[in-house]
Amino acid sequence: MTDVAEDAAFAGEPLVVVEGLRKVYRTGPKEVVALRDVSFAAYPGQLIAIRGRSGSGKTTLLNQIGGLDRPDAGRVLVDGRVVTDLPEAGLLELRRDVIGFIFQSFGLIPVLSAAENVGVPMRLTRTPVAEREQRIRMLLAMVGLEKHVNQRPYELSGGQQQRVAVARALANRPRLLIADEPTGQLDSGTGRQIMELIRAVVRSEGVTALVATHDPNLISLADTVLELHDGTLTTTSATPAPAPA
Image (cartoon, rainbow, N blue to C red; front, side, top):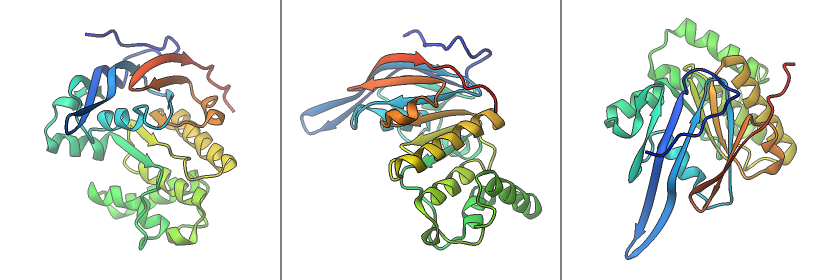
């Protein structure tokens, strides 16, 4: 078993443990190794940026951690559960109750308002109506969209749509946020605002966040930076946590 990299700045038990992940994609006789013996740990309240060029394995790694795909070797633990051993029902429960996802394409439902989009995960968990409505209002206020609750995605800017997506990801109080290139469709200024919002959520909610990005302007906002090169974790660096506001 490969040793798991640890960040001395964060104490306690890690929320995410990745051990010796290997993933190979096969197209006919050709093999593409997407992940090569990747190992690291992520702790509560830690924002980790995963950087690397397109094709370096960032999305593949996040998919293994989020239970959207399974590795060929190695294992992933999230909140004490061995994700790589869970049956489909267990994966659905994990993704519903423990993990919040933020995607580059926002992933909002076009016919629903901002408030209705944020409420979808809570409907799946049958959250009581009064509690659901209160949390929707709180989350949209948190991301600065309290005046846009009734607008549909096409009536919002790209940055506003991604803020709705962040609020939706937080709906069921996840312990882990997984964000795959969340600023990829945004201009640099708006992208930085979204990354700062994710960092603020990590601080205020105490969640762990894994953010894949190739934008060097956003790297400085992370506590820890992991770099992937052709599926190999080549560097692990810690950046100082910003002083509280």
